[in-house]
Image (cartoon, one colour):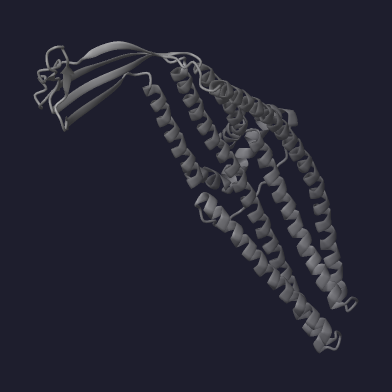
Length: 431
């Protein structure tokens, strides 16, 4: 299967211009937005890692009291004595630090969770890229189909012009009534109107392709005729291993595990070394105030352990566990949905292959019917209305055939992309 894809996909991409639209997705604003989100998450990882380092703060305080601090001493039978204990002016400078020794594993778990968030954001970006690839292919294929519709109706217009010229000649020779001429003219205007409508639809799709890729279409949309034996099991196995959207949910499961660990970490005490270099005084010289030491530096150990918080820790842990269970159920459902989507994609491809054979036979039948009808009309053996219907039926049959080819083109790409971005990119750009 892999060898088949290696032959098919490069031929499609590199041979007919779809590659430039696929490559341009890297410059899509949505992808760039996701890249910025990845960078932001990486910065948040550094924030989590920073909590492993000591925290150092500097504080400076200068204030003047309204009254001098005093205390009253009473020594009966002597009269009370008021003694000053400080000064009105107070200046403090402190450089303190806190170094965490043990946080109940909260810091470690937070770092691990942040790493998982980074991985998740990267996967989300790649999952978005896969979706944009598919949208690009769908637009390309649909534009091709509309282009072929337009060409089929242009061919029909040429046939109508030719028939109209013949009808006018028959009318001049009294071999056709005027209503027959008018009938063909009406069909011509119907075809012209259809062409204009199809051009508008095509332009709308080209505008969407321009919005998505930033590349203005050059009207050279071509498909390649190819056939391959694709295997559903190979695509399913590859998808479950490589699909970014699936791996995003796996990361969500890992993050849910981290949330449970974080909730459990609140049951442990936190231990930290604390200390400070502290100077104080009654002026900026910080040489004391005559009452307290000028140097108030210290070092110590801080232990904090929550004994009761209204069962908040318990409920937080329960919430984290329920979140993990919900994510696990969603993950199982999502994998089943991916398997079902791939299975349905193969069913659709088989249906389109059958429809292609039918469309090919329809074109052959309509060509023959038009040839016979045209000959009968030129020999006045059928009406202009019948000829008009034959021309219209042939144009529609040709357009339908190209539409089915475009749908097969899109479906094959869809199946390749359902195998995962890595798988598709390796096949698509390997020369």
